[in-house]
Length: 134
Ligand SMILES: [Zn+2]
Image (cartoon, rainbow, N blue to C red; front, side, top):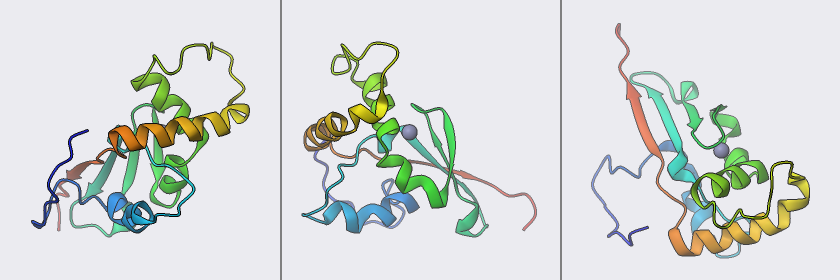
């Protein structure tokens, strides 16, 4: 993706709770796990509610994820697999239909780290829903 200038303004589009919670990890030079596919994740926040109610939707996996599980999801083999299959089908050629996902864990991690170097981790979409009675 584009090498944007870091935006210091409050409420920058990239300031989702998920991105904030991943920031330290993303800056960690010795981290093991690549992070890709954040752009397939939507953070759904209820305006005026506490953060606990935040829910995540992953488009490529077609699932809802609780806040407590979202990090594991992003770094999970299945998410990488589905993301690469959906967004980079050229790289997924040869995987076929019935794939033994656990066996792909290592190649997927390597592929994910290539993709992260090339495209970055992606930007989480944020969707704030208004709550009627405050
Ligand atoms: Zn996913």
